[in-house]
Amino acid sequence: MKKAIILLHGYCESGKLWNNLAGELNNEFRVFTPDIAGHGANSLVVNSIPEMATNIIRQITEESIDQFCIIGHSMGGYVTLEILKQIPDRCLGAGLFHSHAEADSPDRKENRNKGIKHLEQYGSLEYLKSMAMSMLSSDHANSDDWFQQAYEQVKSNRSDGLIHALMAMRDRESQMSFISNMNKPLLWVAGKNDSFFSLEDILQQASHSRLSMVHILEESGHLGMIEEPEKSLQIIRDFANWCYSFSVS
Image (cartoon, rainbow, N blue to C red; front, side, top):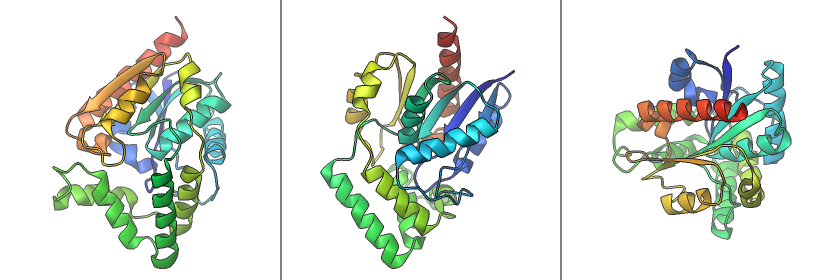
């Protein structure tokens, strides 16, 4: 039986975010890329990260996946850590791909609230275009081709799902104590030009985890799996193999 990898997308995205890498990984692993509640084809709308995690666990169980390693992009990283907390016996390791373990700062909470108001008043079209642009590194943001690649990842999402996801992210708790005490492999992937999470903050958080694999994508913003796919592919492959070798050591 193939080793299983769960890849979770981030806010505004869907499981399709991972399609290119999943195609390569499928040669060696069983890869599952579900849609988080309120995103993509998942019409369920929930109000918290734990509820998102419970829904993903249900999908994993329906796929008859017993043990797995899991990697989440951005918001998907928050869901990833919650899944590890809920079913630690099944999860062999967790990856934070352009994500982190802290709760929102007051400034970030206020930005979530502004996003909610904008979506309620104006809908998602211009909001998603702005999100796509901000996900790219500064070297890619002014390219029509790069913008279109980013926009393809976000354009199909609905305002209601996005609003509830903003609420869930705004109200989530810090997971720093949890990661400081966990004894399973933890992956950190940071984009050097990420406008959402600073490299310094990611490295500082990673220093608190006991079993860390840390990678910096030098030419990426917030979409390393698209901006640097070959490096991202190797990172995921190496981390998954580490998780499975660690579980039997």
